Length: 612
Image (cartoon, rainbow, N blue to C red; front, side, top):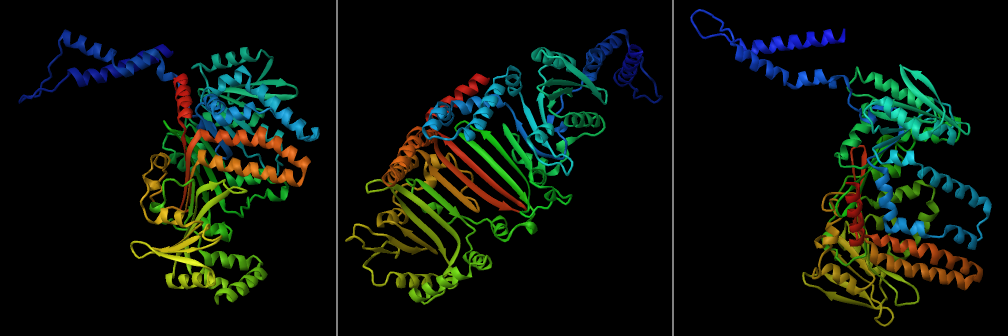
């Protein structure tokens, strides 16, 4: 019957093609039809036989469905979904990194023994780590993780309480089958497991049930994907979506508008994508049934989020997006999340030598003052009002009103020349009323020895003379901003513009995520140099602990020498790190970028070559 249908279909296609190709109306006074010659018929037949549609019909390719996007098999109501292009390669890249090698090389058992950590706390963790190591060494799992893999957590029907068993039974793993034939893929799986299985059917699709130690694993081959779950319902839901795909173009999570729009932001360059339905996820993880109401109450206002990663040639790029309902946000969240992005007007002045730079554009002092009052801290506000009034003749609220939204702090270096490490800080605040701010500062330093210096352009730098001039904390009000630095040299380095600027430096440009555009928050750090200062600070803290308590000092030395210091050193794998966040209508975007050190770049290139 199939052959008859096949030949009938070919005959109809051939008839239509022959009519279009070889039977042509002639331009004569009387309509006439020119009959084709034998050679023309042969040529036309050859063209038809070689056409793509006929080749597909004869080969049977049209009967073989193409593998589905695994996201089409993930139920739309999934609360958590992780999509990885090659988890095995990502794992190897992590283990080959300085941080991964450090974590692996630490002798954790010996450290915990020396710290005298009770076994009641250690054993559960060590057992879980051992189980994880065994699982990751499984050949079948290793084969799965080499392919695109999707892991999803489905929301169980309320009032199911969250538990490890419940989470496992409502989790779904989808991975591309390495074989085009689903039956062959299942047989390959059976050979890998070498276990007796049962088979149950749903919508005509067989589901393998493998049982071990009282736990059942359900496996099915669906649309070019292998579906795994410890519960049967997630696999059945995927089969239902596979059947629906014959009628609907898009199924499953692809129909989820939040997911689709968040995924579009990755622009197809992501090798790792995490999606979370925050409302349903919170309901699932709620400790009591009363929190699992059908309304899915969401006091924080956050609806969904996505986190994705892009591997560049010389940098790692992470992006996160959080979607929220402004009317459901808490007051302080609404202030941060809905604040209009502004242009950072002091970034261009920053020297390239800074270790760390942090900036926000949503300070709004009056709002935070009112928040403090509304939080029941009126006594604190009253005490501050009394003190400021005595010192300046202004209330706390009046002082805050002098300043605007922009605020930043930077660290030029961490000085280790003294008894303990001291970061050289500079604070920058937007000033709304310059004259009032200058009068306020003059009152605060009245009676102290100061030095005033005029710079080119008429800018006055005021330096306090402390410790006979050895310490000179300084400030200046320039272009609507108050600059306050630990030293005169540090302030002049910012204001005179003679040294290289941060935005001109190649290592800053390597991690620039749009710092020159309006934003709400910015962060930049030179990791290697900062690590040196942090190590000095950690060593000093350990010494102080040993001075106070010899026994505690001995334990802290173990922790510092064998764990903290090696981990800090491992951060040198990234030369610079930058982060930028920006808000827009109902959405908060965070972009982070890390520039890899030369050694790390070589390791990454070697791994990419190995994968190819």
